[in-house]
Image 1 (cartoon, rainbow, N blue to C red):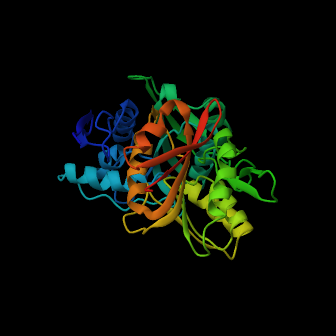
Image 2: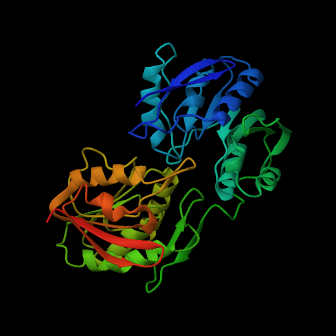
Length: 379
């Protein structure tokens, strides 16, 4: 995939997104503005620790390489993208390994550079976490594209940190300069939210970066009866993958039907994986399960009798079927010859057509005005 060049006051970077989304750029104006402000405000020093939070594809981590930054990100995309983009910029020192919310770094940090997320609850969580690792006189630079800033972001910042300056907008991006506040995760009631699953005693909870954490979404509600029916005919010990698992509700529903199956839960979000782990430990502490933080299906994952999927259709503000198509291709490699892929998706994205490019047998199991449940197989 061709790379594009990000120019900023500290230099320039050649950057590319992983995968085949050639039309999608690996950086935006918010990355450039954050780098410009960071270079101007942070003094390089062996004693100064710098942390990058939720870099997307490596622009911030590589752009600040002179500071030797640590990096933590919710998404499993960043480690892969960072390695690839480091190769494109061989003159820079190699980046450190990326941590996630499954193994977050410890402070204190003297400066933190953070991409503002699209959702206010996750922003509130991040700012409270930052307060716990930022030095007393530390600097927080938070930036994002203005159209993607979450609702009530001004209030979210005011409740968590001390806003020192709101920088002038440039190219529809904005950076906010902050100092640590007193709000903490320990005394915040919004960290975990959830709901009770219909027709069972199961309660699922999730951290703020997880999709549909406060109520069962309409598509999954349509999907779950078909999941239960499909796994009910499997043999004990058969392997099932809950791909893009979120809070784990789909795989948990499979376990309520058949606790003797071997379940794997996988998601690109580390907060999703942490949420699934918590729900599994409370509901099925003895079940044979594993939880993986991964961007799709690992090449060594083996084969599954069932792959259950509610594919994401947006990434970094970009909406489309590019994520689903990649997951379909991976599912083809990891579905057993007698297996079934069950998925639910938005009707307007035409997944029934794209699935047929990977599987010879595709049939519709259910539908409502917004969503469709499909089954794909080799025979």
